[in-house]
Amino acid sequence: MTISMKDEILKRILAADGEAVSGQELADSLGVSRTAIWKHMQTLQEEGYTFETIKKKGYVLTGVPNSLNPTQIELFLKTEHFGREIHYFDVVDSTQTIAHKLAQEGAPHGTIIIGEEQTAGRGRMARPWESAHGTGIWMTIIVRPDVTPQQASSYTLVVAVAVTMAIKTLYEHVEPLIKWPNDLLINGKKCTGILTEMQAEADLVQALLVGIGINANQEATDFSPDIADIATSLRLEAGEEINRAALVASILHYLEQFTELYVNEGFASIKTLWQQLSCTIGQRIEVTTLRERFEGVASGITDDGVLQLTQDDGTIRTIYAGDIKII
Image 1 (cartoon, helix red, strand yellow):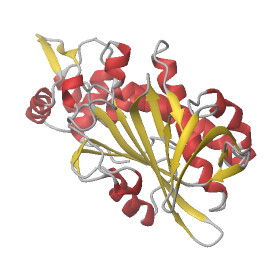
Image 2 (cartoon, helix red, strand yellow):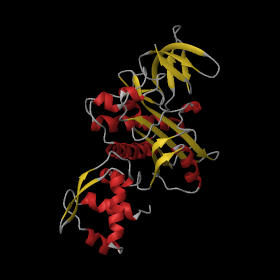
Image 3 (cartoon, helix red, strand yellow):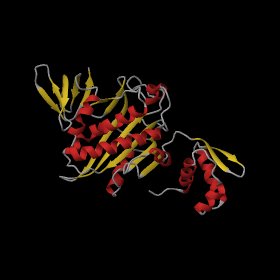
């Protein structure tokens, strides 16, 4: 990943951990003029970073914006592959659209596309997803697992486990639960949606494009009236501002671990944990598919991630796709 001069300067200042960084030393080591360094510092200030200038010592970082700048994500990153190439945008139509293009061009396993705002964010079945500027995590991860298209159908459930564990690790008193197949709920309200799309040949997955949308720092008034009663944010539930860069890094950490386990041992190795984190199993639900609507008790999932539903007459139905409502 090519890093800009501005981000290289930021990286060195962040690494200084509160110590002064000489502008002249930056200029000498980067092979640019002192004036060029000053101009980049001005740009960083416009982006929300604050500095104190100490005579004869240099710049001291005094404030950092809650940004998804790759340099800030890298501070928390502990992965081998995931997030080692980051395509960052202030405003983008959809990270999923860009991911499709980059995957076709050969972007490596673990590449992420992330934006501060999406103007055409979407969920399953092309439903719109509100993606306001600077409030959430809107990203797509390009994953290239060695699995068949049939095996890949359960990967969304793997992602849900990874995101849930990442949130619980950073915010222990927040309890996200997984609603099959792709939502995370907190206190019954949606905070996260997952969209997995596939580029594949008949018997080989070329890439899985994992879109993750998380309501991180929205206030209650930020949600439009049509979703205000059913949506929440991590900030509302945790009672504090969410460090989005730290959360992204934590998600990538867990997702890399669970992806490796999934590829080597299949979804069955993660199934028990998914069930423990689920708010679906054991509940009476209404299922809506393209052809019909029916009710029953969600009695479990198979080793392939397929939902099992027990109807009132004892008949067990397998649900491969559909919308569910807990009733």
